[in-house]
Image (cartoon, rainbow over all chains, first blue to last red; front, top):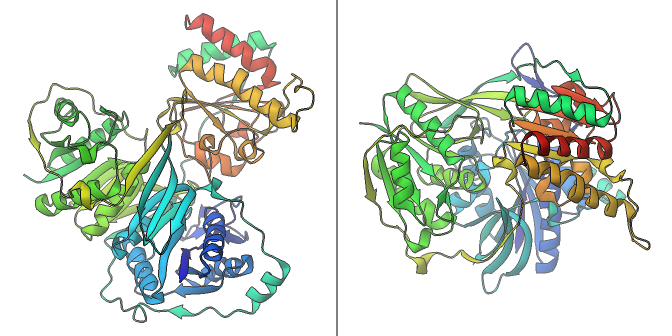
Length: 259
Length: 342
């Protein structure tokens, strides 16, 4: 049995991301890292596969740059890595991504649980996660902060979810797709041996034809990237003793009508 | 007449306040498209909330207070929404980008093979096709996107004006659930409410603390295992919380504070936490790393209080105070109590 997780390479979290004169997104010479939310899903996949006595597999959808994230996954200790890449696939369209992702899970054949990090910071969404579950026809449990219990034989799963205003405990049936939050675990660092092994690994690349997907066409298209409008605010520094600055600040906040 | 369908999210028999922003966005989009708005309201008290939606500009409302809709769950909600979309073929389906809204619309877009555009901060149409502007790369840049056919759009909280009551009228139709309770696998076993906190995403005012909150002049009780954690927790509880309370706001935190164990992750603002856009954001003892900025830079007015005058947070702030938060914040709380008459 396999526990499957999806990951991708995104610009280093501290990198300055900009749109260049040619309209392309750049982040200077900064390196890519594993999508920050995926540290937790990769760790959870290793742990869940370990507990179930199964294998863990990481899959990335997109260009060769995502091999870096897959190598990080292998270095952390995931057993397998695959990448889906096809000129006809627009992975910024969440439904195209989900269609390919669901087909890859089906191709692996023996997955019971698919784990995603909460969202992808580059595309800025989690739509593709829910849509992967719907394309598979599986249970979707988002924002999971803890897996309370999982029983593959009985086909049941119980999790804690972090939603607005509190924590839910939900029970549901397997197979399932879950998205995990930051406090689900403490991600491990890749070991030296893991990094060496990952460096030598060759990652199979699947085309849409390999997955049996045809006629994929994006319904949502990104047409342009743009830099943020500059924040035109000029900072006003308030000085004096604490009572003075407090009074000055309250004067200004009342004038701004934000209180 | 063609229609824009809007999901009014409910919680405990009330509309989530940000749902009226979704209705406001839907009203504007419908007028651009020459369409009318249909509101979908599910859960306890749905018929009354549906009436409220009509007074706020919806031409029609669909409602069900069936027990299977009492607490939001993806399966029954998506089954019904997808069936309604197939039946009515709306030009767009709009909801607020809450955790439930994001999940529900994405699922139904997949069920109906439709375009999904999440977290819109602007909404429009070109030649009858719905267009959005949405933040990408952790809010560091924006992207324009266009939908073909029915567009499922979630709108970011506090990016659109809420629909105000305008005395509109219309009819409320009762809709029946698609899934019977017996065929819904997901069961809610318990819900632990986080008491006394305001939802960060909905908050109009947020008071946030960073790692420097551990510089509490109070001494931790003798024998405390991690004195810095004790000091920081005490600071959040006895210094920042009272300021948030007098403002009717929520308490936020930087990643550094959360990672150090000073406060629960639910309070984290930034790239791996919540993205917020309140009217007022008060950053105390937060240096303003780019990851934090990504989560709060769209706040209307930013106030920074930090002992380091060179901290990057001052570049975003409208008002800056260099000093010790343990001296300034209590003075600010006292001044606000006096001026706001609390």
